[in-house]
Image (cartoon, rainbow, N blue to C red):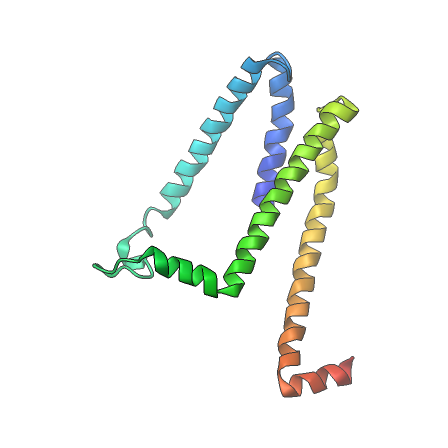
Length: 166
């Protein structure tokens, strides 16, 4: 997460001056050249990732590398249908992705249309990033603590311990 936020900040910090220097936000050529730049950056990072996992990417490291064993679509559907935690993970990941897209679009709209200065967006994001990181870490700690309490409550002796402490 920290890498993603950092990369986003770096791209946003460089994107606004780059697009402004190539004709502004209304110039399609500026966006075309920026998209090429982002695509090249993405391909380079992907190549670095492939090089990083090259040695471990062998059939012997796969979980089910048995030959002749073919999975059917019915098996996948059955797993998705009967696995409630997996369903919740899919819903959580999907809604998180959608919320992130809405947040990005809203910020762009706000700084471009309402304020009229997109150059302020990276500065604003740089100021709010520490608060986002603190909130994320606090949320993780809270989830761990609440998860541990739920586990303790399920055990017979654990509930007595919670009653004594709390």
